Length: 78
Image (tube, rainbow, N blue to C red; front, side, top):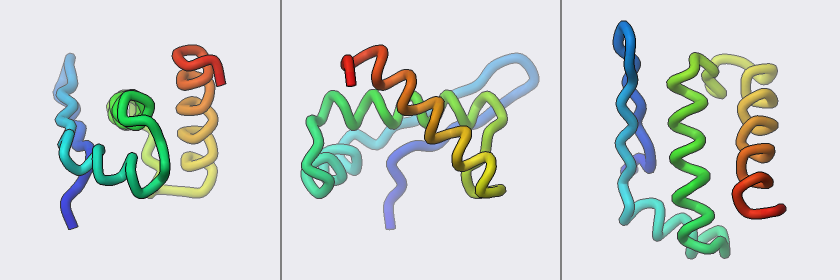
């Protein structure tokens, strides 16, 4: 299955790669606006770049979700 976002962390920087076509399909499937979904994936990549891995533990998954929701609320007023 194709991925929506990849992030790579180096010594002093990070790269985030987004697959727009995958994000568009997910937005339709989740009944979300494409811009909202795209922003969510960018934020998700940034959180991973910051060292939080939602696949590592439930605690980190909760932290990642809380950070995503806070950032999306700031951007989209939700």
